[in-house]
Length: 291
Ligand code: NAD
Image (cartoon, rainbow, N blue to C red; front, side, top):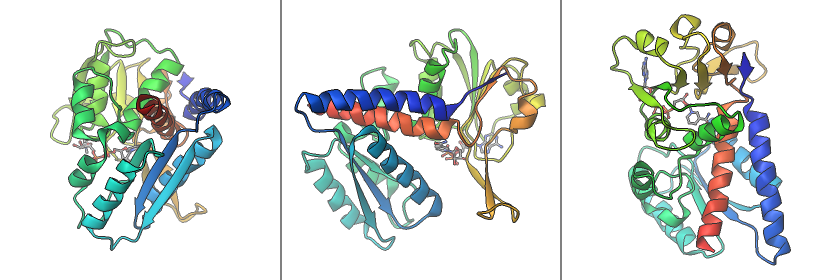
């Protein structure tokens, strides 16, 4: 069984970006610059944004963290995004989701300039992805594609079962895996909360992407022997014996599924670090395109 180590694969991607940044600077250019916008003080969002800012530092990118109290109005946030759009020294903008309920995520996503949309959530980015045009691919699906590439896992002609149809993971993942690209060309089944016979469908999968947000949902009896299993889930499960009072669980029961799978990504240390690698690649892309 191959353990798909996202920490190692992400390190390799980041090292390559670091060398690229060094070369740009040696040629007299400035470094790529990412602006991260964080609203409120959600614990998980704080951790994600801190990881993204830290990675910028490791690679040599500039980063700006813009923080707002959760009482900020929608208009104030839109005004800040407009300011970042017009700031020539900033290449990429990410707005950490979720946002407080009084702010429309759809409006905020559409307010980010498609030229700086390193999260790949803007309708223009999504449309271009669907048509196979140059775009920004959402960071998590992009990270999974980079993981497949890192481990040179053959996908052509395979049956991929994607569990979850969200705009940020499941749906873009299904599009990428079915695209006519090196790590695409799969036959894709996309499952969601209304899917019947989920277990039967999963058993047909040569590749399973679990992105439903239910701790340890995928068990060994749902997995075809030798299948590639990619676990996207991140759920905090309360546990008084843990130092933080909770443990992070994926959507796959790792110990159980690793007895049948051919390859499996762990949580933590799998898709999480690859998501950051995807974001860092998008930031370099945004910089180069704007240049
Ligand atoms: P979401 O809640 O927006 O979507 C979940 C999807 O799963 C929905 O489409 C729903 O229909 C489907 N679903 C729910 N229960 C189901 C069931 N019993 N059977 C079949 N389908 C079911 O979630 P999301 O934003 O796509 O995130 C999914 C998980 O991935 C979460 O745990 C999230 O924290 C995690 N995540 C991780 C990363 C990362 O970097 N590793 C990034 C994004 C999301």
